[in-house]
Every structure is written in structure tokens, then in C-alpha cells.
Length: 163
Image 1: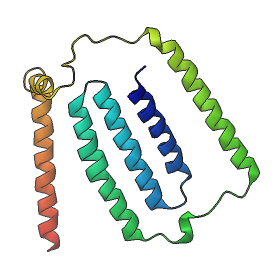
Image 2: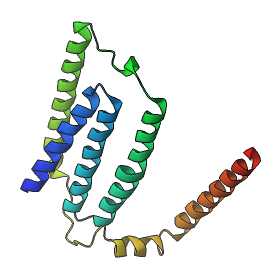
Image 3: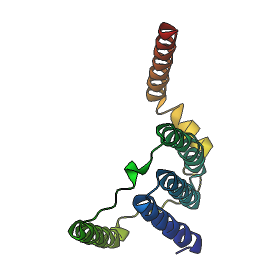
Image 4: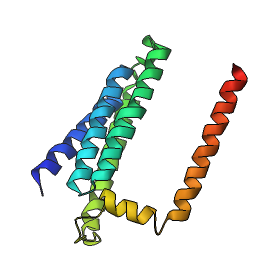
């Protein structure tokens, strides 16, 4: 096991836990940023640099800015800071979380025999993804581009209608 994998995997787990238990939504969004960047490092570790770039630019960049904007626009006061007062539900949540992690650990332990080793380190590179998009998946690529064009035209139509 590589030490960078262990460091960033544990960082992602801790940040995800902090994201769930954060009382302030802004702190939860910042913890989400740490999780997304840690996952991007994992993608780099798996020799998929293009997916890592997408992870950082789309999710850590655009989506997180959108989430932060909505949180600040709504300006939550004390509505999000309602603690769980019943000890039963806290205990139940802890037990269910522990059982879920145990099941996931046992499943992952048995899945090590199924992992396929990829010999080519070019897997996930921008060149290889471009080759696949414009050869094997050209129809899918064109359908998505037409759908995005229709969505853009619809957004412009709705925006002009409101003005």
C-alpha cells in the first residue's frame, strides 16, 4: 500500500465524518471541499489524471461554489443547529454507522480477489479518453452535445421571456 493512498483516504474519511456532524453548513461545505480534493488525489494515484482534473474543476470548483452561494443566500440562522437530544437516536446512529463500516470492510476484504490489474498506465489519460470519445462513443458524444445545445437554447428562451 502506498502511503499517499492511506493519508488521503483517511483524510477523506475524517473530512466526510466532519461534514456530517458539522453544525454550521459553511463548515460542512469546507469539509466537502477537503473530501473532493482527497478523492482527486486518489484519482491521480490510480493513474487517471483527467478524472482528477474533472473532480477538482467541476465538483470542487463549480459545484462547491454553487453550494456555498445557496447556503449564504439562504443565510441560515439557528435552524440548522438543532442537536439531537434523544440519546436513543444518537446510539442508534452510532451502531448503524459501525455496522455499515464493518459490512463495507468485510465486503472490501473479499473483493481483493476480483480486482483487475491494469497494465497500461495510459488508462484514464486525456489522449485515451479522447480517442474513445471520438471513435467508439461518437454517437453518445453527439447526443450529449445536442442535449446540451437544446438546454442552452431553452435557458436563453426562458431568460428572454422573463426580461
